[in-house]
Length: 203
Image (cartoon, rainbow, N blue to C red; front, side, top):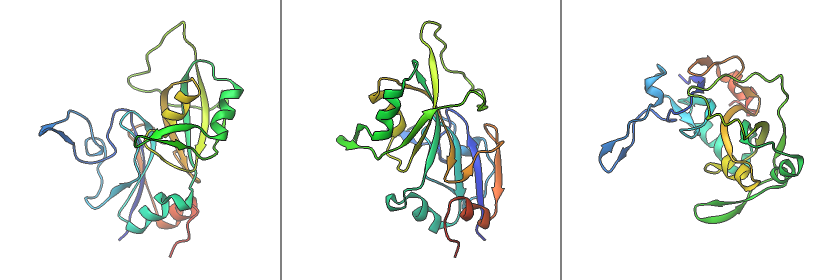
């Protein structure tokens, strides 16, 4: 039986169920197992960095991993990004046009993206712990939509524009959204909901 879950991965939680080791020493980091009670055969499709938050999809549907992650499918991934400083329109345009970042030690030109200022009425849950507040340095929020997922790509892109990422929340994959989920919450969906939201043809 295939099962599908979406969850809001909190800040400082690994997108996996086991704790990695560093030279034989177990690293003191939380994993999904510390927060969510999930079936043994369910695994994340894709990942979110340890210091990123938001939407994560888990399933035992092995075919979904290829359909969602292979670069040829170009699925949208949307992020709310808090950056250091008051980001301006030229910086947003640079994000839209594509940035040159380093991927595996080589220069890589990112695909065109959608980037805009985040409307003030978008409700974003508080992070625990919160970002470091510095009165003399303002911050701003943007909505960034990518169709690829290189390692720490969003952070590398905003850094290239001169506005380092302070907080990163993935809120959407295609039409699959966090909705009213709070950090640490989870919801089970059926196959039809998942495949329809991801714009995939269910077989």
